[in-house]
Length: 315
Image (cartoon, rainbow, N blue to C red; front, side, top):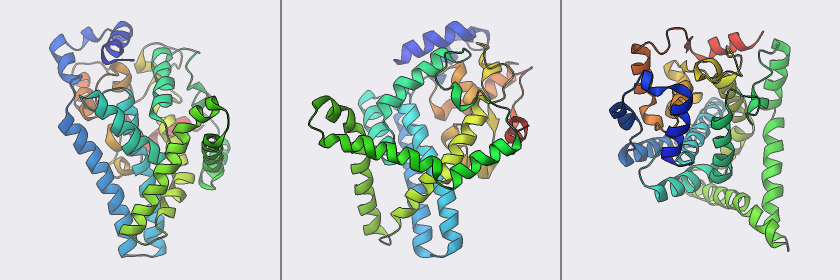
């Protein structure tokens, strides 16, 4: 869905004119290549900084810390993929395609194009029973025992291994004699190839084994962080089947350290994102502040920190 179409869909459901005039909508939906490159560069610099930390001080503490921090960096790449899939990170569409796919999606075992297609349906059908993402959060609130079982599956690698097997199995289709299977397998083969190159580059820069931290993080802590992000965005909301985003979506204001893990690149401002999906991530905080000042959230609970969200979503 193009930039103008996103505005059209969201304006129809939210009456944006109640809170923003046309000039303000134009400002908040404006894209900046400078801010986009800064977002991308900071994300990658922080990834390399985590690897450098372990390379310089290799011990169990730094390794465990790296596995946790890298999962937050993988989420940061997923946010960049998400933004480029919305065509909102860069002004230039070729840059959105290149950065979203080659500098963000592939290395975190995603395909921007298939993700964007499914995600556009989520925006169109959020607040309805046709929302394709409903299975991720419709069962909440859940019992503490149920959530503990989910945490165990994530941290033990069970969730991640299932996903990794799927990627590898689909990537293997590139060797198929069937042209349609080869074509469908191409994005997955790209993901594997990019990760091989990434592993080689890390081996040149740091210790040869250090790429394994990326995979360990992806298979364990990243799966849990993805689950917590899904819970924070749409689980145990006032009314999951109400078209008003204030009832079916949540914004969480993180503590500073949570931004490193659960809320990179302003992904926590999810209510604002559903309010106006064509707003780039680097303008969401400013939009949140303006909407709050104008009373858009007078009857909306804004959560402070992810612990508060989990206490709310776990019965």
